[in-house]
Length: 149
Image (tube, rainbow, N blue to C red):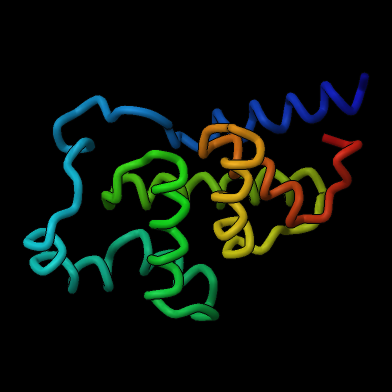
């Protein structure tokens, strides 16, 4: 019973901290999908200032920009999210916030890219939203036994 409460608490904290939402965007800006003109006009800015570049910096350059972008976009598509800068930033913020919460509680630090790559499978196998998938994948990647969730 105690482990069930702990798991619920971790998931709730992850969902509150993430700010990542599932479903339809509320504003016109958030609901815009990426088209070729947007990509070509903002590709340089995305590579130097966007969420993918920030993830690359945080992860110490261990992965290429393209690897990070591909994994992020695959996770977003699996979660039914649009491929916008806002959505990319949100999912990476979610991963980093859950990671921070786990390490603050003394748990091992999950590898952020492994968490990102886990998201599509977690969404499809558990039937959960992207925010919940981030929490589940973070717990799995950190090696926290399911009995403690």
